[in-house]
Length: 401
Image (cartoon, rainbow, N blue to C red; front, top):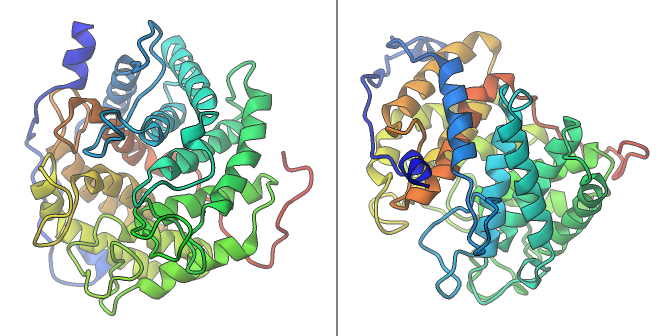
């Protein structure tokens, strides 16, 4: 227990990897900025994989460690919401199965099997049913990332023994849940809806983009995905882009510009690109803004409060931004990718914990999430390209399962 506490709660370690300065010129020229030597990535991937396995725990007063709950400031009563527990567990399990060490590690496979069992069991809870409570409800995070995890397990043929039927059933059910919990009229998804869940509200790009990515993949695997739900969400994202090319905190915002938008713009742009609604120029611009204004993420890392002035950046954007920016790099022309990868990794390793992980919150437990996103960032060049979306394609491909 002491070892796990030390592993999951290390203090910030600022390494010797300096931040490269941007040079004037074109985007490809900027991507070739001078870069200090990086640590051995293979060793860092193994270290992060091991750390995540060690950080598995339980909040249910039972002896078996079976979850990786995300912890933020939001509580339901005094408890971490079930949506955060399921979402956090799904994200860590996703990162683990992408690691090259997963299939060689009995401990990692057993940890993921326990995590999958936890997710399957707790998705049955009434707090994860279709619905939205009051004006703030995070169950959608659990729905989105559970669906993403199950789809990746099925695609990689890594479904734990005895869980295949349940995962197939829940993939279909989660697609239905997400479609029924879209924001009425305006489209997309948001955990914060001031008028509750049954009335129109702005969508959250931060939540909508990953949800769309999961739905794109679900249709590719043969699930029946409603094209109108997807199109409404894509419209909401495409139409909220500001004149400066920033993606606001929600789709109703009009003045939410850089640097406040650096955490969510890259994933939004490549999600739109996959549906023919964006282009490489916009993806590159989002990445350039992330790299140029990265210091504002660092100023909010482990900070108190949420959307504080001057740019409204919440701490939970920090490693979310790194993980998805790393994936966005893979949409650039091949000649540009290496330079962008190095510059992103410089920043990632500059804020590594002594334990070898990453944490953007004041809560030691949230190193689970930060390390998972850091691991996915390191692995980004090896991950499969996310599935695209074409409105002309069939809603459900027969026999794809």
